Length: 359
Image (tube, rainbow, N blue to C red; front, side):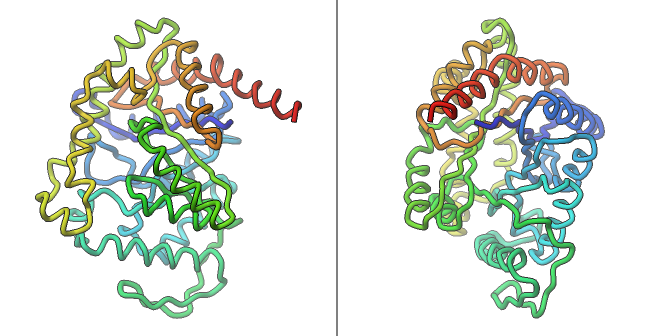
């Protein structure tokens, strides 16, 4: 079992920091995570909505973080492909792979409905641009020179440089059954994003497994979970509540700028028309704890939650912990990383070693 960390770069008004401070603290958190044995650092690509995220250029951030670390890998969850020229993006992937010493991988997604108006991209073009971008990236990473003729992109004899040191590992996820079926077909990994209990996505994971089996691929599942730790579980639950509340508030803040429901349905954004995202901000705090939307407590309590997830989904390859959110104080993030790496990770790494020696 691998363990990583995940950060959304939230910067809410109530815990406001300078953008420089946010980036500096997260770089320090990555250095700390690398020394504590976490295997991956995950973030997302997002634009324009500060309360949600200020992670506008994750590949540049990874290149900087790679110079300060030795082993930790870097993963974007995910790049919003319709915002990018895929021929240019492929070269940027190659450069990031080189600058991180081959420690870069990424997930791909169509993106949140609220980003496209600000990017001057019609909502109805997002799926087509996403599909064509994927087709181009597959060519870019497998062919020395390629041509492509589609509705949105029409190019001849493109040679992407620099080349990545190896074909990148690709993942996807989100709310669409289509993505899970596609991932199984392509042999990609899938990501279960934070604030989504495992039981909520078990049907989609079944779709993914079936697609993997049908296409001769092995499931590769990354589970992302929001976390807050203290040696005293009751103290952790009391301290965490305002951060959890603000995290949810930040995640739904951009929905205020969504088009009307009927437009979203017409443009193939049914999830955003459903109101399901906004509903998460109304879930009572105790229910968030009881139903595993978040893990808050002492290391011994959270150890049980980790074991429960592994038992329910034994083909999970990694659990990544969301240890900082909602403008949380830097030292509290470091404390959570310390407690998790010192009192939880060794238990499951030791367990894996025992299983390996008895097989």
